[in-house]
Image (cartoon, rainbow, N blue to C red; front, side, top):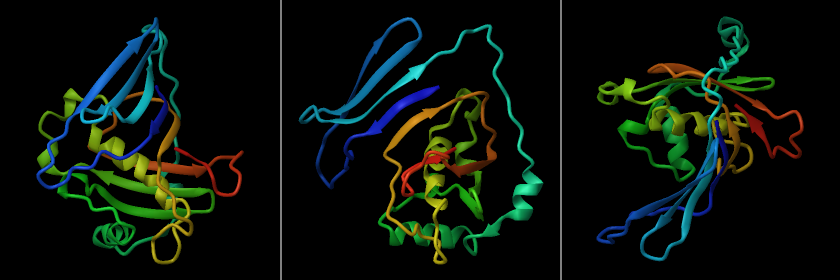
Length: 193
């Protein structure tokens, strides 16, 4: 699982500015802790933990009735172009490799998003257990939970912290993300995926 993941500050790429990132790792028996920091000033951009499960412990699996979720869902956007036009209005610009959210549906308890990796990223897909582009879109799916009529969140939210993401099996090149409000969320402060 990925735990205690926190985006502390952005890593910005400015025209002509050469800066790099350094990853620092520490570990104990089952936990690998990491920090990703800027080379220029040592400022930590991201920190978190990767926790390994016992090799012989079978992964717990859950199933969702996708047909039922889709039947209950209300389309949030008119298509992929509308989704990314909304992200752009919020200040998020995504290149072709990160434009993988295809559909978003509003549910009473949260949202359902369909993701599909572009053909250009499918070569070598099996080398990843959790493809970085899919992980980015999974986290971004939290923005659909409180999407208003225009497809934008009713309150400005940016997923900047993740308590835990339990990784049970590899995702496919096309998948759905089911995002719900946390039962203990206070004032729209938490969602679960």
